[in-house]
Image 1: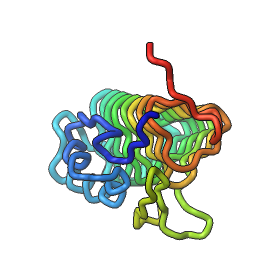
Image 2 (image 1 turned 90 degrees about the vertical axis):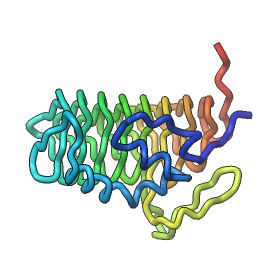
Image 3 (image 1 turned 30 degrees about the horizontal axis):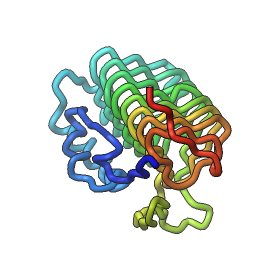
Image 4 (image 1 turned 135 degrees about the vertical axis):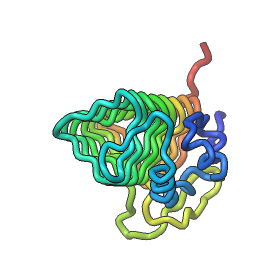
Length: 223
């Protein structure tokens, strides 16, 4: 059976220069969520080579495309060659690597996107971390708050109390979430794993898997 990984080092290969230290020092990915704002403020103060100040509190890399109807609430760091499409709403504490798509009528808040992340249509990404080449299908959301408001427990091989009230989705490198999915608070999707459309996902899904439903998760065939 493939591993149900929850350690940062097992989920991500972070080569984004301004995020690398944060990933290396974090045992679990959700440990990074309370540190996003502080990191962005530090980067705004120090600057990043090749980045320019779009407006107070918003630093952007080269060739960033921002639709006129997009809204960016500071602070934010937007990586090079990233596209922010019409109606996108960045609510603050958003940091991306290069070549990302923050899509039409999608909302982002207190989150990290590594390289080549795509959340292109009607997505909600709050208190979440999306790995390299992670993809969210149209209408998929990262639910980040339990209905009872209690701290979120990560349900993997063992239960881990995160100590946080808000955690959305943790998508490892090359995770692919189908259209109209709901990732319940604290859901972790392993590397190279695919989630079928219309799924409601909870807990930790192993790497190299195909999630058809909670009772039907299969290993990907090696090619």
